[in-house]
Every structure is written in C-alpha cells, then in structure tokens.
Length: 560
Ligand code: ADP
Image (tube, rainbow, N blue to C red):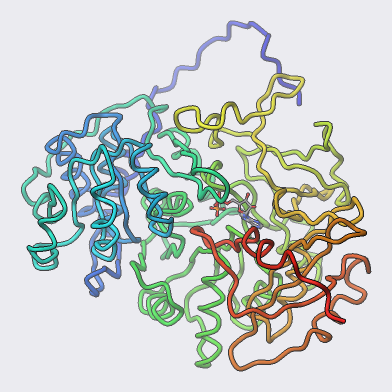
C-alpha cells in the first residue's frame, strides 16, 4: 500500500468549482433533467400510485418546510418506520436535504430494540406507515424524545379517534404537507454533514448506529450506477425489493434520480405474486433484493408457468446467492444475476461479481463459477484478507482469513462512539474496517466468502466453509432452504450439521442429500447429519439466524 501520511507537500490547487456533494443535488437533477420520469408505488392503502420526479421534488421541499414547522433542528434525527413508497422517498430527500438526519428504523426488529434505537438516536419525529400502527401504539409511551408521530397517509385512512387519542401529537402526513409551502431553497451544507442513520441488526448485543454523510452517499451512488455494478441508466425501470429501511435500499432510491431511471416501489407486498405483477405491469428491467425474496418469486413464476418479459438483470446480495439460483435465472429466464456483497457499515456495496474481458472465453460453467463469487472490489473500496497475526494473506484462492475493507463510504466509528474504535491500523497508518467475514481472494481479485467469523465451523482445528455446503444442498430441486451449522463434537471440537427445509410437496432423503457432497468437497467437510425442519429462523435483514439453530441443535447426535 504505497500511501504516505507523513509527506508534507504544498500542491498547486485545482481551479474547479467547489460544489459539495449533496443528496439534494440528486433530486434537483432529476427534477430538471428527468422531470417527467415516473415513481410508481404500491401503497399501503392498496392503490398503485404514480408521481413524477418533478412532483417528488416538490413534495420533498414541503417535507423540508415541515421539518422547520415541527421544530426539528438541523442535525436532529427524523425517523421512519415505512415501506418502499414515494412518501418514504420524499422523506429521504426532504429530511436529509434540509440538513436533518433521516433515521430509517427496521420494523422487523423486536419492539424492545426499536424503543432502544429510537431513544438512542434521540429521534424528534417519527413518520410511519399505517401497517405499523399497532407497533406505534405499543412503543409510543416508551420513547423519550419523539414529539410528533406522523401517519404517512391521508385523513380518510387515519386511525379511529378512540385509538388515535392514545398516541400524543398524532399528525396526518398528507395534511401536514398540504399546509406547508412548496417553495424551499436547499441549503448548501458541508458535504461531510450527516445525512442518514441506520442501525445494524445487532444479533449479539445492542444495535449500533451507522451514520452516513452526504458525501459518502453521493459517492456510493455513483459507484452503484457503474456498468460493472448495477449498471443503471435513464432507459431502465428499477424495482428495489430491498427495503428502504435496510441500508437505504442499497442506494437505489438515490441512484434512480441520479440516472433518470423509472423507479418502481413495491410497498408492503413482497410476496412472489405481487412482485411479479408489478415487474410485468411496470416493465421493470432491473431489480434488487436478498436471495429469499427471489426464491419466493421464482416459486411463483415456476408454479404458474410464467416468464419475465422485460426484467433482464437482478441484483442479489445480503446473503450468499446459491449458484443454483444464478443458473435458474440465467438458463430458464434469461435474467443476469448481479451477485454483490456488502454490509450496513459499507453503505452497503463492496464487491460485485462482474466479469472481466478474459471471461468472455469461458464456457457456461466457468462463467457461473465467476458469478457465484462475492465479486471484485468496486472502485472506491479496497480489501484484504489477514491471518490471526494481522499479516496480509496472498490472493491465491486458497488462503482464507479475516476480510478487511477501507474506502470513502465505509464506516470509521459508530454513532456516539459505541463499540470503541472499530478500525485496525496497518503499518502505513491506514485504518481498515474488519468486516467479520472470513474470505479468500482469487488471483484475479474475486473474493469468496466462506463464512461469517461467528458462524465458522472449526473441525479438528480447521475451518469448514458453511456457505459451500449450503450451496451444494440448495442445488437439489426439493430443497427450499439449507443452513449448515456447527454442533459440538467430543473428538473434533465441532462438526457440520445440515438443516434443510423441503419445498412444499417434495421429498428428499438424508442419504440423497449426503450423496450430493461426494467428489465436490474434501470428504471431511461432509456434514455428519441432516435434519429436516419446517422453517429456518430469519433475522430482521433476511439472513438465517444460525446462532438460534446452533442453540436448537447443540445436543444433536448423529443418526445411527
Ligand atoms: P446487508 O444485509 O445489507 O448486506 P448487513 O450489515 O445486515 O448488510 O449484513 C452484512 C453481512 O451480510 C456481511 O458481512 C456478510 O456476512 C453477509 N453478506 C452480504 N452479502 C453477501 C453475499 N453476497 N454473500 C455472502 N454473504 C453476504
């Protein structure tokens, strides 16, 4: 890493305009240059709603004025508990653009955790979709700083008066916006000002806050739009299934106005049938979400003999995308999977499994192997793997170690210094963020995650990669979901156990599943046993909760 922090040089300065990178500039651009382009939302009220970027910009300016009217000061937090709709998008721009900080709360968290983070963030106002009204009634009395509760709906859909009386200062969003002016001049903020706040899901301990800045968000959006990333343009219609309460929907609500793409927002209906209908009726060309969502969509498409008329690319990340899913999308539906890796602390995009020029000569199998990796670093992100002593390991596709990253949209410290200083400092005095993932890197620079460090299976002192084992099981047509977890073993310390959920109405035996591993992996990696379960516990961001499975099966003994 040829970087010197101690060099004191006095460069000649460039003579270009000093315009800060601000989130408001994205919606200003969309209004001026793509004013007629549409944002289509399936709303909580049940309708399909259409609005142009011009109108979104106008309503975002009303939100900015409403912040002032509600007494939310610049730098203070305004929270949301909301689905992907135009109303949520207007808050993205109106809150951040006016210098307040948008705190997107994940409604799938436990109510105790929601109370904890709302108090921790000192949120001044909470905007919520009516889906979450029962939750709001449960938590409103336990929060300390929220002064206004704003239902993101019109008067006709507000809660009944007797219920409404239980939540103090309950407002109707549409009335609030109608009362405020649509004239507003976006302030020229420091580009390093905080723009939004998102808490990690906190499987162990309390959730920690990640504070994004205007600068980190705009840079991340530019990188996300690049051809080897989501490759989005003004000719696209993009549907983020990934929620706006989860790492800012991977940046798509910023990327669509930046590129002029049509934005299609699925609201609360994330089942296969509803998604399919919207993909088709709005002629969506590109979509993005976690593997479990695509599984439900594929099941619906398969069961009904459907095809995708316009969708040609699908961004998949958040958990490893099984190669069987990548192949099914490609070979059966002509949809190219963009497998990406990242995390909340990385805004989230870090790597994308995009091809290089030399891969055009590979056959289908070879190309599938490249697409199944977690990918190569996007410009702006650097990565390395290190051993237990902190020394960097080679990129030989064999050595695996702790994955570290650095870059301008990667976290330096958590909100309010929670968790101390997370960075590891190298010999050149560069700070690296430890991702908690265990990975190897191929000589071509493609990163392969073998495990979360806390989910690693250590057998006889050696690591077994659970993701590989899961991917092999997932290739069986009767397997809906597979998780591989460590169970205690008297001789080896830990051994892998495969937990499988079967597809409805389909059968597969333990022996059939174990036979899948023959010749594909080192023999000692083969799971000791298979158990069949009705479900696998899922966390708030769509990931398998392996800690729960480990607890559940810690007394499991191999079948005789
Ligand atoms: P997000 O779900 O948005 O990626 P989180 O912070 O909730 O963000 O989770 C990040 C973790 O998710 C990563 O550290 C990694 O363990 C896992 N992850 C994300 N993308 C992938 C992927 N493509 N393959 C394997 N694991 C992934």
